Image 1 (tube, rainbow, N blue to C red):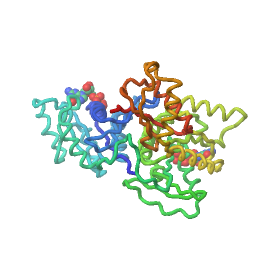
Image 2: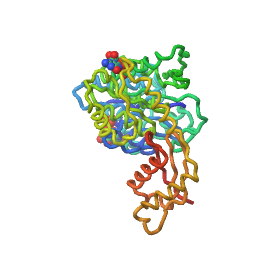
Image 3: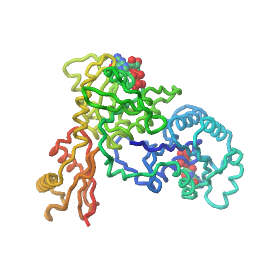
Length: 444
Ligand code: GDP
Ligand code: GDP
């Protein structure tokens, strides 16, 4: 399972990074599920260019409105791109000309040996082409002149960039249909200092003979296979967990990008939450990413040893966390101490059950019988008199389980009815702890 290549847009403020980001992400059919509150400030998007998929990051979008000086912000953006991106689009502003800050960013990128596409924005028409020559002082062979706002020059830039992206094999909707691996792919995600490395070490400590970590399919990923209770697992991107970034400032945005990358490649994400801090915005954001990616999630409340407990403590945590993570109130929760090891082995019992649900397949006959019952009891309002609107239902994918409902007019099915169907399928077939999806397809 390869993760998407990450493409970062870097540049000074106001050069047009968000405009380019929006243009590229709207053009593609990114799977975007609205998670209220979780992903308001969208600064990453799964995109594709003629079938080649990539994840786009607007590094500027990660900047908090803060008092940091411009130069520090830009350096950080650039470091984020250098550390986390596979390809970089370095955007400059034709109207401003080549500035010292541009030269500084360019130098940092070049020193890091990144593959960089240099683009000059706001070249809105032929009259602006005179902007370009001075940018060749950067000494790079190709400068792309574009207008992010008017959509000019984007094709040339993206065609060349797409040469570096692997061809897509399947549509996101069909999900992973390849042969089932014999190892369950788990990832540890969560904000900095929540205890990911500690939990990793604890888990691997149970295994006396750890196979040598093997380099993952991508340059920076190292996955660690291990066995517990006779079952084989693969811990995804253990290098990412161990890597403590060289930049101490703004570790949080690294953790978001790290989580995104890891989520591309795992099946089950263990999302760590710090019991002492309770659930935070950063946790919600990472949970939102996991939800959008359709991953099964187990909520691991860590540092439980630090909490003074009474009879109502667990109940209070469960309620708080579920309130904040309404979109994944089905995710199981466990309270552990990575430090002492309390309940750490119990995580694997949850993983087993979640994996069973996440990979379960429901036969078409059984599915259609049940859906007929469900719809008969509660038809969509506009169909109340006309009868069952769906002429056929079938499961089209696992991980997450995805059901296609064939219907004459897919757009007529209201969002709230979709929610009702999802909940009904959940209860009817025991998908109680994993995300499931529905797609409405036009019946032919
Ligand atoms: P960011 O700070 O780098 O993300 O820049 P924005 O995307 O917010 O753009 C800054 C300003 O430049 C906005 O007013 C945009 O409308 C404008 N802008 C972006 N792209 C173009 C372009 O291609 N041509 C012109 N003329 N203006 C643009
Ligand atoms: P990471 O940044 O998510 O990998 O977090 P670390 O594993 O490096 O942990 C950050 C800090 O929290 C370290 O000082 C750990 O010793 C501490 N820590 C991690 N797990 C626990 C726990 O379960 N209980 C307590 N008391 N401390 C913990």
